Structure formats: C-alpha cells, structure tokens
Length: 136
Image: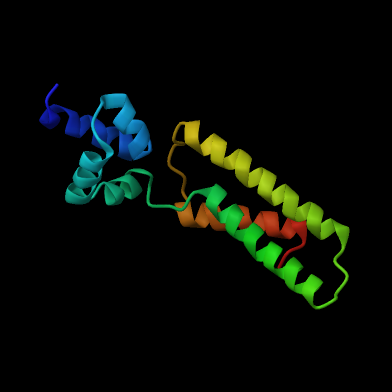
C-alpha cells in the first residue's frame, strides 16, 4: 500500500480511534516521524478535537478536581492543620472514578445528542460530585 493510501487510514486511526502515533506506526508500518509530519501538515489534533465534540473528557475534569483537592490537603498539612480522614477518602474516590471514566471513555460509543451542551453536562456532573463530596 502506498503512503498516499496509508495517510487517510493513519488520520482515521489518530482522530477517530484516538490511537497514539506509536500504535499507528506499528499497525500500518509507517515511521512515527512520517506520522508526525502528516499530523502537523494536516492539523490532525484540531480534527481530533472536532470529532470528539470539542469537549474536555470528563475524566480529565475529575483529575483536575482531584489535583485541587490534593493541593488543598497538602497546604493544610504544611500549615499544621489536621486533615480529616474523609478528605483523603474523598480524594481517593475522585481519583478512582476518574480512572474508571478514562477507561470507559476510551471504549464507549458516543451518546446521542443531549439538550445540554457538552460543557453544561460536564459542569452539571462536576457540581453534583462536588456537592456529594462537600467540596465547594
């Protein structure tokens, strides 16, 4: 198969199937350097974002929430403030949930359209989690 025929396949694997360049390289036997060139020339990252709906993955937002909580816990520890065990438990649950969400998002079929925008759905879900965990 010629490179001209492999290029669209490589772009599909990157943008739709969200494979890494290394995995694509192995799958279609094209060097990663060639893939990097194609990716830059044809703006694959922008296409990937457009295909995924342009929204940040829910797991990434959960990890961000976990980072904020971890920083606050660390600062309290440094300041000599006693940290309630429930805060550590809540942080661990967020991390575990984010990891499960990441694995699910990697294989889940795309849902049908919602009346809410992706950003509104993500914000609503995060607000519910924050409320449940008592994080403001």
